[in-house]
Image (cartoon, rainbow, N blue to C red; front, side):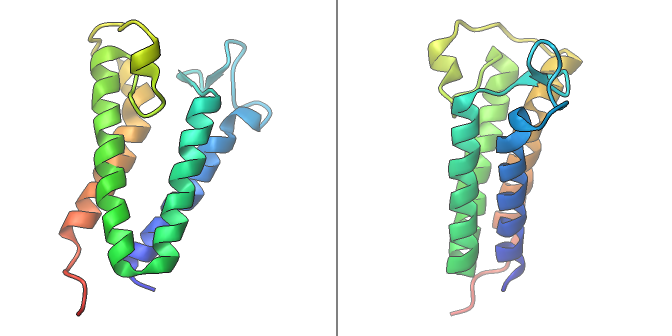
Length: 136
């Protein structure tokens, strides 16, 4: 198994944990915010589970599939995090289409709320692009 395939397995685990956060006692505060920073709903959970399934399928398919997952997933999540910084809502869970924009806000809470998608996306894109070409 290639390094990229192992990284995809790591993404599977991380995304499944993200999908389960609302269901672990004590992970949300009285306002329903995970870690007191962001809210997750059924659309977010579905997005995380679908992404996790995509990651595990890519991991067991081939190094090329893993690389493609990392690049495409990374671009989508990185873009979602950037849009979240600007508008307060992302596009992957359709939040930007169902809510009025909150406007640009460079505060720490807004940054922290979008950090998971920015970090996961950025690492994935970097790994996918920087990986050596697939063997023939």
